[in-house]
Length: 115
Length: 110
Image 1 (tube, rainbow over the protein chains, first blue to last red):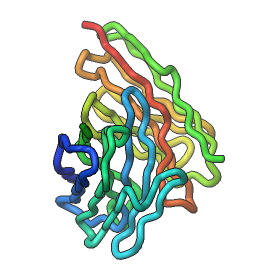
Image 2: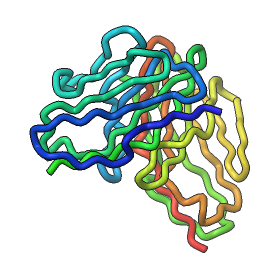
Image 3: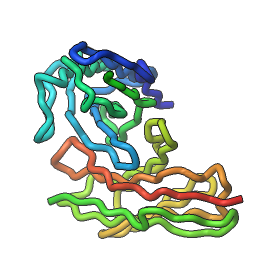
Image 4: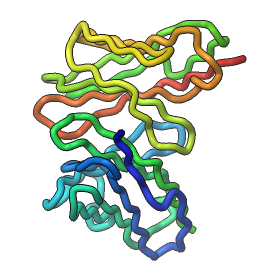
């Protein structure tokens, strides 16, 4: 199998606080992980690509100081939304690519609500 | 510029009524074309990867095909539980990122 676990599935936080989202590949190693944001009834928007042991590559328009990505091991990547504001409320999804196989498997997503 | 276009945007079918979803793409050097299914409030579920023109893959009521310019997801005798958004994505040979289409929202009426 290829299971990707994302945690938490839902989080509500106050404006100005930071939130960390974890993405784990449970039964395979993932050299590359991706972070997406999805607005209602829209497709996935790639935010950044992270490679184990190196800095993430952010897409144009994504603030790297606001969305901190760490990929410290072959099975774990984290996304921290710093100083969250209501406009950061969204559905965030991670995916992990099996090392050597160009197929990406997705986590369950995290619904972030900033109040 | 790499681009993925899916059509139709939405499709409503009667249970048992077969149809096809289209994914047109322009990419320089295709490394893979992917189909995913996404249910509301969930992450996409992997369905198929197609690598070269002429390739076909099947899973239950779904069959994916690939040409040099497009891919089709054929659904045969669909059931209400097949209702979901179907996403197409491509990856080109010199980039690590995957580009998604906007999806087709499929609704199957009992």
